[in-house]
Image (tube, rainbow, N blue to C red; front, side, top):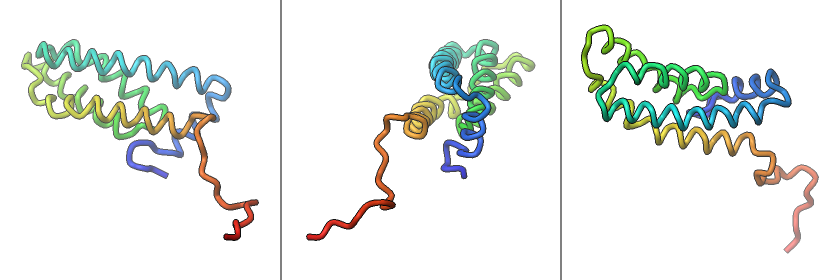
Length: 135
């Protein structure tokens, strides 16, 4: 199931594959993601396509590992534009729209991952085992 930001099948597979390391690796994704977003934004401000490539590539790969497909696609778009600009020795103005959407998408993705992976999150009762309350 894909809820728009997270492909739940990929997230579930990552949870199984990483086992007891899942929470720790997810924490690394958050830390690395924050650094990547900052680096991409700084590169955009500086109009430096070369310094945009690696953080976009890193964010793309790590996002895909946890099923964050929307974020990965956005990072991939930035990476492709930046690589093209490096080859043509151009400034990455074409990436501005993508970079502007990057932080809000990253933050929404983190919120959804926290919701989906936090063992302390409040779960709504599904009704099973609950007797209806008589009024």
